[in-house]
Amino acid sequence: MKVHVVEIPSTDLSIVRDLSHAIWPICYANIITEVQIKYMLENMYSLPALEKAQSSGQRFLLAYLDSKPVGYAGFEIGTPDVNRCKLHKLYVLPNLQGSGIGKELLLKTQYLADAAKCQSMFLQVNKKNPAVQFYQKMGMYVREEAVFDIGNGFVMDDFIMQLDW
Image (cartoon, rainbow, N blue to C red; front, top):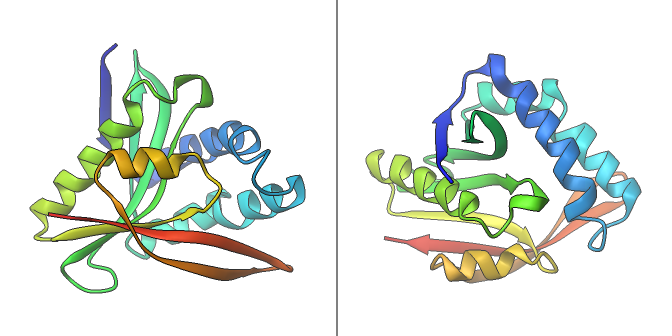
């Protein structure tokens, strides 16, 4: 299996949107309600929302397997300070989770963050998300817990995890 990870321009953000709509309903089915999944997809993964994120400094990576997009990451260098990187998004198609694609996306993000002189990377992940174990395996630790109000009566109950180097 040969995975190829590339940074994408805004013209390819529809691929991220389409992957999100394929991934989220399956991955979050036992974690949050269907109504919240739809709300978050509309507010965070619509094309206008992704374009706004990119124009505000978020960068996107796509993972390809045999020229087919199978996962993505979204990250921001220098937030909240110049020595840190925030991993906003990292998702892989459910049937390919555990195959090393997420690892490749995370390593590419870390490589780009390190090249930009960042010394750590952090992310928010739902406390019930099985991905917590993946991030721990990759060397991340739980820095703190936080609850974020995302509107419409919904919250994100997350761990804030960090990787230092």
